[in-house]
Image (cartoon, rainbow, N blue to C red; front, side):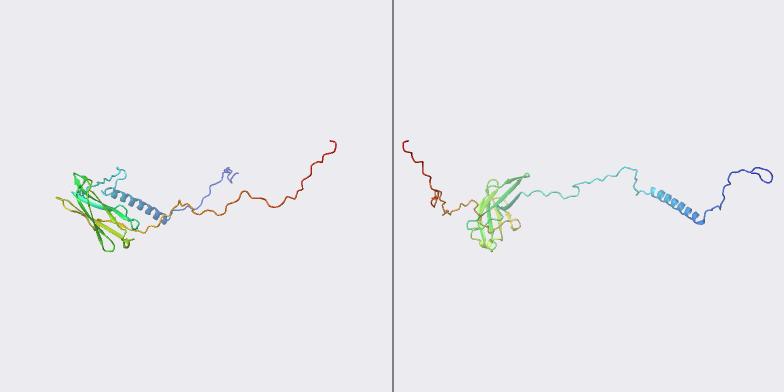
Length: 234
């Protein structure tokens, strides 16, 4: 294709041109806000790094040491002498022959080792719920043990109620040791249900005896067939 002057024009397409978009004021404001936020972050990190109270995340892990027993109270030493009492059965069944066993012990501390006090007099006072008391006496064995047998067969009023037993130990040259009401032995009588006898043998005797030799009744209806008659001359 030629123009008016005879020059040949190129057939290549011409690029399209359009309006040029220019940054708006809001774009500059957003960029400024982001830059300001970045600058504030840098300042905060720089100021925080100089504070001695901020932990160093890249440093070693801190350890905690717990000291046990530094502030605790010391264990009190054992007394030179002590005593106690207890019932061998705290819920015995009540019946006219009930006897409750009560044990009491008198102990001496010898260089941290417990040893029984031999030959000490022990007096037990049984305090029944109805207000009455019973006094029993015993003497300690070489292991410091005193044994009491408390009969309770006539104390129906003590059923389902607590009975206390206090004990006092005495021996020449020693301070008496008392098991008072705060540490007394105790038991409660209960009404025990009778125990069923699982191996009971029946006492009845059967009256009907079966008969194995019965006689059949009735007459047979079948007629027996006669035998063959003998023929003469045979």
